[in-house]
Image 1 (cartoon, rainbow, N blue to C red):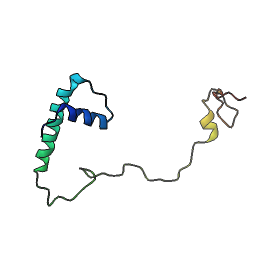
Image 2: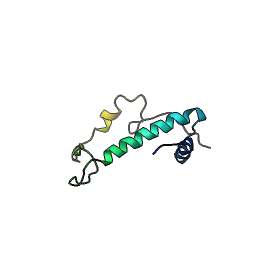
Image 3: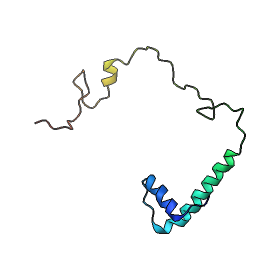
Length: 97
């Protein structure tokens, strides 16, 4: 299957890509190469291969959700530039009316 300049324009339009006339021939050749590669992949016998979501096994890398004691308020506020003893004080960034 050969791609024409009109085919490239149609594919670019479907992908919402702006393609100049000077790029059409190059992109047609690149599309042809991609389709050729997919045709090679279609020749592989996959009858005994189970479908999978990922090519490699994935493992959950998150730590267990374990309840631990948190940082004490005085320790958390110790190096804060401004505090009222309970909260961090920061400059207002939204003006109120």
